[in-house]
Length: 372
Ligand SMILES: O=C(O)CC1=CCC(=O)O1
Image 1 (cartoon, rainbow, N blue to C red):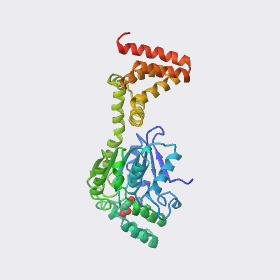
Image 2: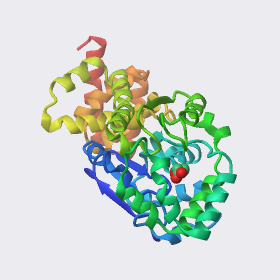
Image 3: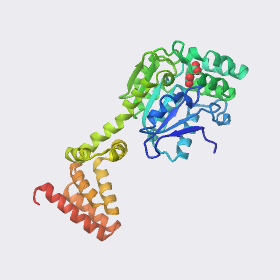
Image 4: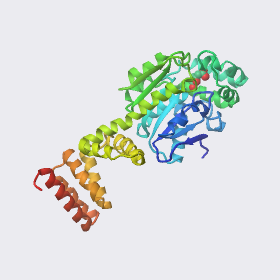
């Protein structure tokens, strides 16, 4: 299957972050932001169909934002990325909102930049699509600066990408914008959401971002002075600061759950022993194991403890087992329930494994009870 053109940066083991562009631009929109983000993330930035390096045939007249989101998921699948953080500008942001409503299990965090839950109805986009199908993109690209940037600022590469986009594909993206309206569904969004508004943005003014922030539970809104529609290009430092603070929440949430489950003493010890060599691994654990998996409310902490004990016995990780017997007690499992889990492992992991597990658990439970 033909995929969206994309550029991947950053360590393959880092948490994946997908970046979506706005109508008329390419992944070059993220040039001032992506290299910095790729220090902590596996950044994958993609081009809209018929824009940058993506084939025009990836979109048809009458397309929807859902179709574009499907292309993004296909790209993620092809890269082996199941769950990802997502940030998108304008049309790219609409793709992010669609993913958050329709595919919440694929997203761990969302940032919507200079975008909206609706683009002022279908009329302006039907007119723009008709204009582009009739006359091509040269005229629109000529006045892109006024729509995209504040003051005299410009990015010649982005204006060039606008002019060189495929008119049919551009018009099909306009069709998608014409049909897009997610306002009714915003309260269903559960993924941590950041809204970034350009204070001087004429296309999606701050009121559009505020409307999303008011409707999405727990969402945060940041307004950037001096930014217009392409905030990542004109104010990369301010966008970076906002994104870093938002995406860092995964690690912070993870650290809170890690302390709840493993206890302050254990986490403080692990932190104190951290070296520059182990720092990325510790961060990975906070973000991924604790910030993403243990925080997922589908299973309770009790259930997660039972699964974890079993998995540790299966692989003979007895030091980790001792730690997770303490965690299981903190998560509300009684010594009898822990014994029942270990007994079951005798069936599926083997008697010798369960034998060692019982010895480890017995020692920990005795220590906890103060009888050792
Ligand atoms: O090109 C514009 O006028 C601004 C814009 C609206 C939707 C989008 O992605 O860019």
